[in-house]
Structures are given as structure tokens and as C-alpha cells.
Length: 91
Image 1 (cartoon, one colour):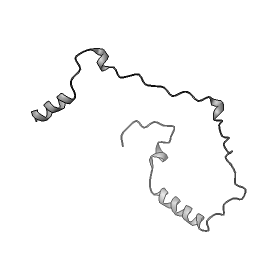
Image 2 (cartoon, one colour):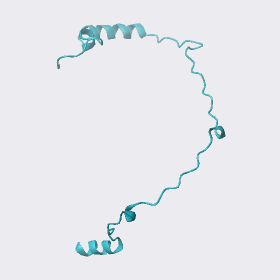
Image 3 (tube, helix red, strand yellow):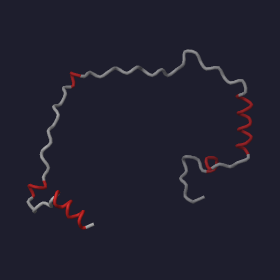
Image 4 (cartoon, rainbow, N blue to C red):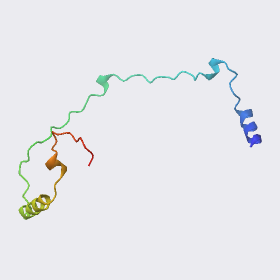
């Protein structure tokens, strides 16, 4: 181990303590590009409504009723606590 460390130190000597040795050379800055050189692209407006609504699934009412019946058997936190009431107890 000491032989490897010694050969490493021979190639990479420690600084003698002068602060100038520790400073890295100053970096060159890239010239700034004027904003007129690259104009922004206009974004498309987001369409908020559909021209033609999607057709409803044929069995949506059956699925909705099954979800309602399953949810009626379980009391969820949102049913008792609500979003306007802070949770004060762990549970």
C-alpha cells in the first residue's frame, strides 16, 4: 500500500501552502446571445371544448351503480373528515 501511495504522491505532490497554487484558472464565459437572434415560437392555444363530444360507454350507468354500492359499505376519511377539517388524530 505504501508503495502505491508513494508513487501517487510522486506524481501528484501536495501544494506547498501558497493560496495561488490552489486557485483554479479563470473560466472563459461564452458570449451572450442577443434575444433578437432567437425569437420565441408562438404556442398553440389549448382547445378547451371538444367539437364533437366523446360517446358515452354503453355500460357506464351499471358500473357507476356498482361503485356507489361498494362505497356505501365503507366509511372513508373523506366522508367523515372532509377537506375543510384538519386531521388531529392519527388513525
